[in-house]
Image (cartoon, rainbow, N blue to C red; front, side):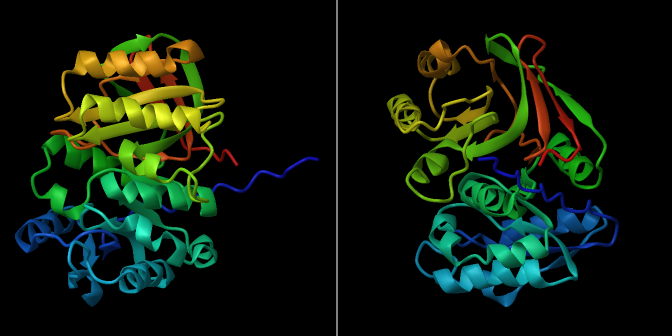
Length: 305
């Protein structure tokens, strides 16, 4: 039986003066860092909108689940909002996935940006809505972001031109070239989505993973669990981002090679994305080509669904 591919939803690019709505799907944030991050967005020429609910606190969560989900649903519904940024990560995004109105989101596609704990929402939006999303800085992390990180974010969100990123510190773990939509995010978060209806299939895709503060054996365990669960079946390629405070890079690469080596797919490490000093914004869902030998990745803004 022929299964019709879903149409890829590509949100409109940001224009000067557009309004960015802020959501807090995870943990509470430090107000000083938050305000500095808002100033960065406003200095780029955007207007920011902060719903009252994002300032709530409920232990290690930024309010109760229903409130955090309602803020996100409302931001997608609001025609004045052209993009949605997460205030911070932490924990909690997984708790609201079943409360998100994906029919409403499909009718109102717009830019959604975040990383870390927000990887759960990035996965949800692709799996349930087939929406192109953006793995990149959140409001609080923008406050201390490097110039390169800020410029890359602005460039990616305000343009629909094809682009290429050359990894200056790239490490080829397995040479080769692969093409497919790029997906992924924080390894622990993706691993915790196993067994849910919110984890996309990575078959024919390029997987991006990053992590922070996880011991080497835990990285091994998470990758092994995902492999045993069939998550890597049919994977086209692998891109490694920052593995901050996770041990020596060579040891991490050894673990990765052990898990993926027999698959024969290209594996490229050293991308500045995730919890490192730089966090370069990349789109999830559009056609991506990974050339591990040349140590670069390229993106094409064409409909792939």
